[in-house]
Length: 86
Image (tube, rainbow, N blue to C red):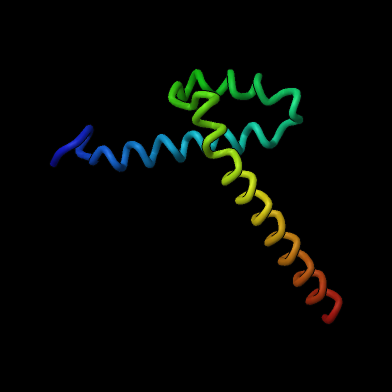
C-alpha cells in the first residue's frame, strides 16, 4: 500500500477539503462579525484551513447550506400537511 498511513495522496487532499468545508460551515453559523474568531479557533485544529482555502470553498458551502435549508422546509411542510390530514 502506498501513501501516508496506507491511503493515497488523493484521499488526504479530499479529507483536507472536507475539513476546510467544515470550518466554513462553522463560520456560517455565527454572525459575520464573529467569523474571524471562529476561523482562528478552528485553524488551530486544521492549519491547512487558511483564509484563502476557506474562500475557495465558501460559495459551494453556502449553496449546500441553502439547499439543505430548502429541503428541510419542504419536508416540514409535508409533515405538517400529513399531520393535519390525520
